[in-house]
Image (tube, rainbow, N blue to C red; front, top):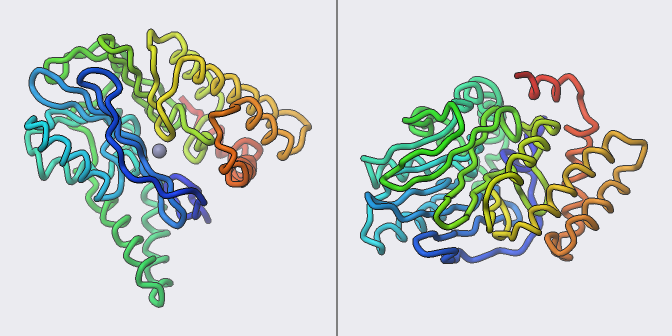
Length: 319
Ligand SMILES: [Zn+2]
């Protein structure tokens, strides 16, 4: 049984990228996630300066990437006062543990969806990891990756929020006003996206992921509805969960491509045809070098989600 690309162990091709802190607007910084062959991905992070300290959107998975966040905070001389987790996937929340160690006063905001994930998806993944550790005795490097991953899940309560986001609306966090929006049953059972009215920057989490959407825990139909809500948000620049920050125009290309991908999956057209459509709809958002892996990932998601087990998808869509 495979848990796929986001939380699982399918190696992805792609160039290694070095971490880079980019200033998106005054007091708003972006740290790019990674998607490197043979390793699980890291999501993107956004850091907002606030009167009382820093607000970090997503703490990512790998220790060295979380360390970049901590180094940024140290250099700025500000404590991390708040973390907002867009959703419970480990490539977005794994670093909560390190941040809690370095900044014990931090408050973590997220939806309550991790509770069910801990007894469902992540419990299954844990069992899978335990089996993999046993079977990888002759591959110490793999084994060490599995152990690191297992340790994240075992840290359970440290990953969970201190402040559960139960509805959409403006919030004062560390003295800065941000608008937190809750989507239920989209990428996961509870996704939070964040709009900063001062800068016009929107942190979308995995509601927007390039080069392909990750469907492992998703309700595709409701995800498409959530994209409509993002589109209604007053933003000028959008930071996706994976991939480069994008303009409104680029986001609209993504949204159109997403709807058309779902429509294609519902039609008689072939998987290959649907992948062609996605690549053509997204245009320059999908790098030419990614063509092959995009096709592989879409084929995988056609099998497991879009054209896969309808009962499983229906369960993910249950309100
Ligand atoms: Zn992700």
